[in-house]
Length: 113
Image 1 (cartoon, rainbow, N blue to C red):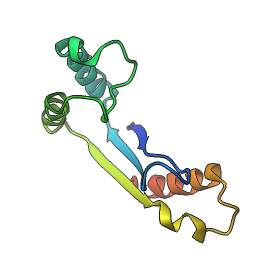
Image 2 (image 1 turned 90 degrees about the vertical axis):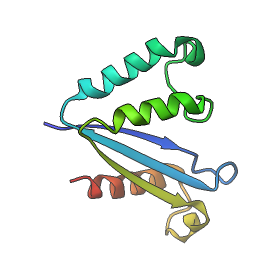
Image 3 (image 1 turned 135 degrees about the vertical axis):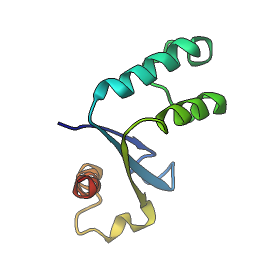
Image 4 (image 1 turned 90 degrees about the horizontal axis):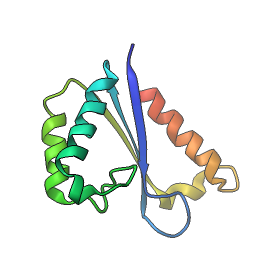
């Protein structure tokens, strides 16, 4: 069995980010990612703080680099979709962000084998 972790960056609103990014990591053993994050939290407790989520925006580069170096040694697959929001209005619905999110996430699901 595979485990898939999905996260997004940006938003689908008219203001804010220029792109909406949806990414997934596929692993056979979910404990691989859980251990990686737990160790990162333990090693960088002072830098990360008590937040439930390690945010890429405000996480120091040394921590991001550490996570990516550790992740690079693991068995995983990554899938990423980048949506340029200037094409948002080419869809036939009234720019309903929920429908757009469903469309983008269904495209991500199609590329995950």
